[in-house]
Figure (cartoon, rainbow, N blue to C red):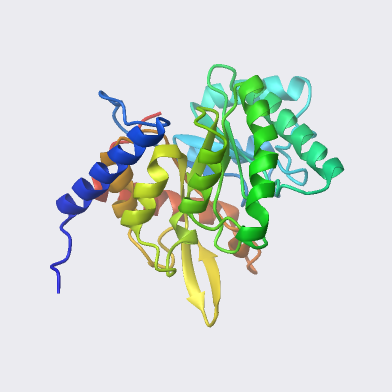
Length: 316
């Protein structure tokens, strides 16, 4: 039996593998002199009952560095609801709190129906416009899952539709990031990497890394980080637990299924210097008695300790 990897050996193996991958696709090589630290964020996905300004105030009060806004139509932070002068108000509110708007969450599964596809393109344009209005100096990325189905049947459709997404990303100077989901047709970093490679190297397309979708699937931290790092533009932090034959998402640290500090260390050693965003899953916020403020504090407290364990500094 091989001895277990030490933390130093683990980091070295990931960093070496990532460097080779990054050089091969030319997308996101680690900078020679990377800045220090990562930002810690949380989204308002689990705060649907809150006005955008209330959610920002709560997140700032907990001492997060950054935030993600949900732009699906049902949320107050959607482009349709944040209009006109209110955008300026939210922009100033972000500046006053010192929070960085790092990302926008959408839900846009590519459709074979051309009319539905056009609607998705319009939503991407609206989200990009909102991002530029709220954070003109550094517009947030847009992230989305791609929906369910069978990978072998969906991958060519995804490739073709994402080609149109790429044109919007480039024209609006907004990164669009795809997120593998354990119950989706695209469910792992290898599949997301295939899609991004098919579309050609672009600084405006990327991947979201969320290990809760790979845990308990014979997909190790080492291998998933090695595959995902070159195109990863944001890390998502949440947990997952097995309940019978079903998997249920949980707050970071709540299920204690895997080591978040190990993931932070692997990415940071490889050169990742972007954002880590806590996500409160709908499986969490639909629980009876759910408290958005309490959940956000659990996320902050646990991930702050994970940063300390990994020895990674925080930055605004």
